[in-house]
Image 1 (cartoon, rainbow, N blue to C red):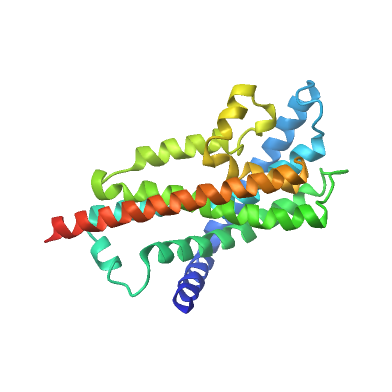
Image 2: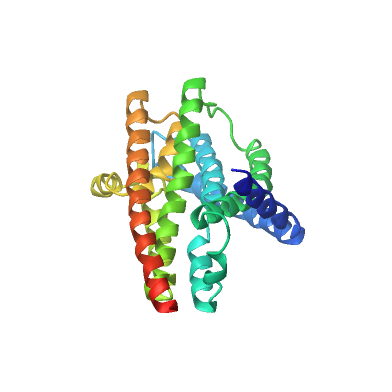
Length: 262
C-alpha cells in the first residue's frame, strides 16, 4: 500500500504545478454552472418535471459535477499511447501492479480536480439553492459507498477499453462510445427522472447508471432505503464482474505482448 500512496501523492503534486490550468478549469466549471442554472430555470418554468423543484435540480447539477470530477479518467488513452510509443514495456517493469498504479494516479488527479473545480461551484450554488434538503445521516452514509463504487466502476470500464489497445493499437472510438453511453445512461447530462420508460428500464441493465446517477439519487434522497441497498448491491456485482473480466483480458494481453515482443 505504501507504493500506491507514493504514486497517489506524486500525482496530486504534479497536478498542483499547473496552477494556470486549474484556474482555467474553475472558470470553465463556473460558466457551465451558470449555463445550467438558466437552462434548467427555463425548462422547469415550462412545466417539465413537475415533481422536481428548481433547487433540487441545481443541487443535482452540483453533485453531478462532483461525481464527474471524481470519476474522470484518461487511463484508456494512457494505455493506448504507451502501446503506440512502446513505453508499455518499461511501465510493466515497475515493482507494482500496473492496474494499481493507474488507479492511484487517477485518484490523485481526480481528488485535486474535485477540490479545485467543485468547491467554488458549491459556494456559488448557495446563492441559487434554497429549500433543497441536506441528506440525512442514513442517506449520507449510503452515498459514500455508492460514490466509491461509481468511481471504481468508471475506472474498470475505461481500463478494460484501454486493454483492448493490446490488440487494436488505437481504442479512441471505444472511449467515444463509452463516454456517450455514460452521458445517456449515467444521467450526467439529463437526469434519468425525465427519461421515457424504455430508457429507464434499459439503464438498469447497464453499469453506467451506478457510476453517477445512483449516488446522486441517494444524496438527494430520491430513492427508498430498501431500493438504495439494492442499487449498491447491483453496483458491487457489476464491479466484481468487470474486475474478473479485466483479469482475464489482462492475462491474454500479457501473453500477446510477450509473444510479439519475443
